[in-house]
Image 1 (cartoon, rainbow, N blue to C red):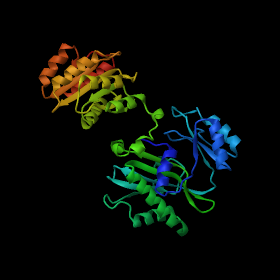
Image 2: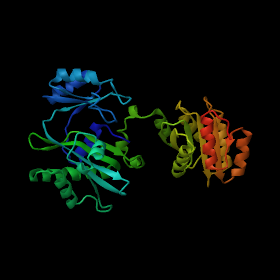
Image 3: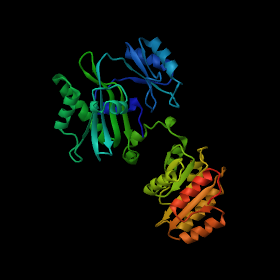
Image 4: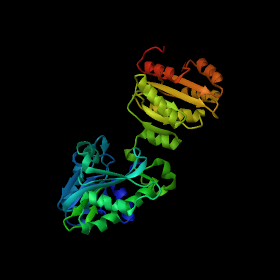
Length: 381
């Protein structure tokens, strides 16, 4: 779950990180009032959960409240990477002497939480890492001890911070690490972390991405979710208790188990197709749950076929098959459906599916190949 910039700043500020404070507005008039309360030049920033706001014209300076109102009118309603801007942040403009990047991320490559830092802030860190990898420090932290003082010193020295800034920098990095850990985040970053003309460090922009699996511990953070920028299908899946991620392919996948779902997607690609989603229906496969999963999948107009891959351990295959047949009868849109059920009562499941004239397969390779052929409009082999 991604948090908007102003929400991320709220969390960092609660852990002692100095941030550029501001106010959010949803209308030009609100933006003018906010700029009037702040006083002086302000920056008007689109609040969208995508990168590249500045290049797209979503970040503009304003010298006074009247100009802030005009800039907000330009930004509100604009589209940035297919996302409509509904909110802007009005924040004091800062005189910047230097920009840095500072982040903490769950780094799967090193199997550790890592500090990422660069003296080239204010730009996308991925681009910096690609074009100038030596400008980026990636420092894995101890899995039990976390951020230690020698880690703080190493990052400060790498960034080339002057001695008079290192004490303040240490407080900021420790605050960032605390915010990351306490919110069960996958990513917490400040970009840019700036040195102002007055010689102070300040977080001008912030981004926090939360681990969905930890949200049950943080109802206050769950309340910060911006549903306006989520796929309607992903919202429906969350409400139904189904793990779902929308992708760009044409073959919908309904699977029980996250690992099996990943393997199913891999075999779809190996067979020459593209998966339209990741969907883990979980342990239960009653008709209402299966129907909800089918509706979520078919909400995507690009889906041309559905591959159902169920491993029946505790779950009985014949119950799943009946649920599939019952659920399919309720769907408004029909596409070819390939079903593979193995495990408990698989033979009974096969009889039910064949009686319903569904395409079946004995192996996952066969199921993937048949789903790809069905999506192309070809007769199953």
